[in-house]
Image (cartoon, rainbow, N blue to C red; front, side, top):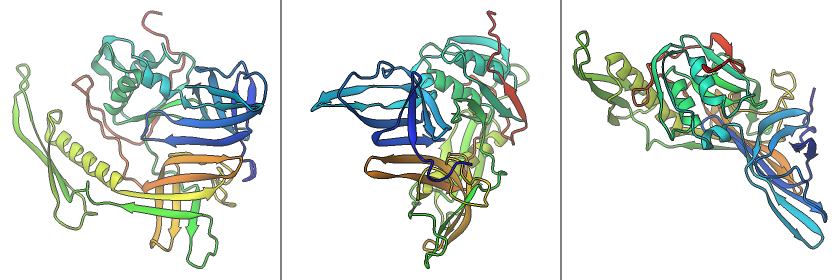
Length: 380
């Protein structure tokens, strides 16, 4: 079992590990398309390692645990006064999908795993993919236009089925959603008497500016064919009890073509506002969960975990959802991790089409898994 002391962050490039950092930071966020790192390295005078070049495949490890797989975005080097200084930023594999255009696709009757495979395989041919879905629909028609980024095309396909896409620390692409049934991995404690405290500080940000007591979605549909009549006055309202006074918001959404879809959209907008409104940030020592006797003890912190919070100064005793982490440290800086926490159950991914390219799916608890790493393309 790894220990809190096993916190050395290393960068593996070309079969060599580097860990003598002046400073490093590794950021991971479920809401950000590409996670990334930034590192500064000082070496004795000599040649810059041949393997450290922009575009090189790289891994970030915490001890023996992989915490990110990607490529070096840039290498800046300076030789002066008998030393070599290197600055090495990079991103995980989502960075390649974000930068590159998706293959142009115009096809009918494709399943979600077929769409995902066609989008990512030309750019990331060896990447393992896991799709967690309960009711992934076969799409009647898929159009990926020239110039669309691979990440946008992937995210649109996922969202049309009420899912989200992200990369796991080992480089696996996951298309799924948050698991609010998973047990909390640890308890973060900040008591006034100091008993059992394991958090250096908590910062609570609660802003009502973008929240509303009720959100109403208005829409209408156009007629299509002999069996589909135009509908006018499509309307649904979702109330947020966490806003205790009247703050109404009206949104026009032309994609919501039934009352049910308008209701789903109103709920999603209300939950997004609530997600943005409340943020609890905690700072802990090291990069591993230091909670003996709890399920996550010894594991590296990562987004997607659920955590119990006992925070007496803010009068909190609740379960929170870990949405982002930021690991940092260096020569003159002790390793620490900033944990960004949100209300549990608030981040939801609701099915919603983009530019009419995908049919709506149905959001649900993960039920089936496809591993499509080596699925053949149509041409094969």
